[in-house]
Image (cartoon, rainbow, N blue to C red):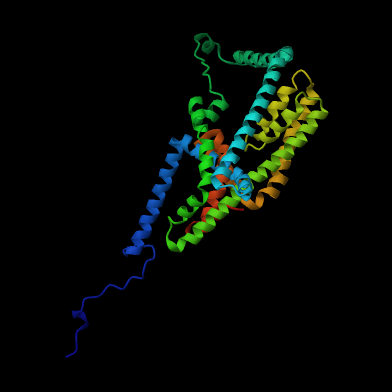
Length: 372
């Protein structure tokens, strides 16, 4: 007997596999959990960097110092000295050189401060000129404002904190800064002494199949930081030497001292130009006229632009490989977290993050976003 087709219930058609459906297999769940855990870890690390900034800043500066002193430590090792002794000598030489530079700078600053009363009349004249202009603007504003508001006294002026207060607000008190700075030489010494031990056991933290990648990543970060320090030092020497020559020809007092200070201050990201212009402008008060001040400003701006567009790409371009957008965002982000020190450390930290992303397949798009 033939079967009646009406006796069969219609079957729903098979749905095509949906790639966007939620994973029900164990590997899919693990990938989802890994992404969530990674996000939570990143947020926790950023929170720790913000709230424990003194600790992270101290460790970062000590790490940079260890990279600076590594060639000197190797030099003493070639003299058949133990690693610990070589590191101790290198750190001691650095502390002694820092003391000599600080002592020399302090004496020059005291001499300059003692001669400042000679320039008081000139400073008063310049300040009085701008104060008079400000008073004129204030009077004009009062004439424009409604009289009833002026009589009722509803206009209030709230004192704003200066940009320096905001910039250094994240650094804590002076006592905390001095206390943290006292740890830097000791941390640098132990980083130099236990370098191979730390690197070896850091690689062992990863799975066996990932250890070669971790070792290559650490090596690339090491080369980047070393190139960053050497490149900035060479650029600072170049700008300082040219600035010293220009200021010497102008007859600026303490030109040999002011020139190199201005040159290395020009290396500070984002704030390099105003910081570099302050020492020569202060030294020129009472000694040079408006034309001289214009020459100082043009020299500082011109050298800064030359270094930014010519020297930095030559000495640091192949090491960092960061695009201008990534650098600008990095300066904003690290400056928000760590203040002025964050501006100095923003570029090497971001370059290290890019290197890590380049060596991890899942994060390579992030590395490409940061790169050129």
